[in-house]
Image (cartoon, rainbow, N blue to C red; front, side):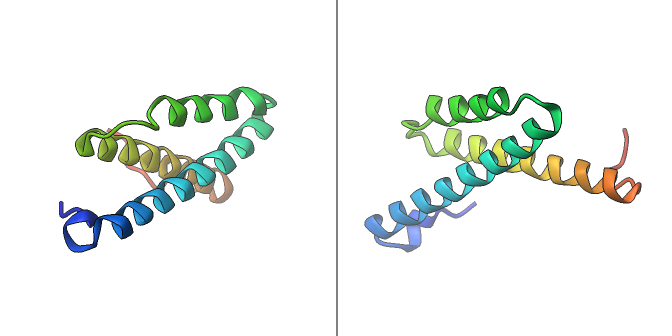
Length: 96
């Protein structure tokens, strides 16, 4: 997978990456608040998200960073699918 850093000046690439992380972090917090509110444990769920981001905020290995981003995005997608299935009664994912 090509990196942003190969096609952009380093300063610009770093800003784009920081912006992406900030958007991902905010979306994860929104989802955590939503899940926590529905399960009556908002503080716990939000705290878990914050801890995960803080734990990895100084990671510099591009492969590890990509895995962390993929995992966070996968978690958000899974939650969105779950909520969609609950609302529509329709199953979107295949069971194995």
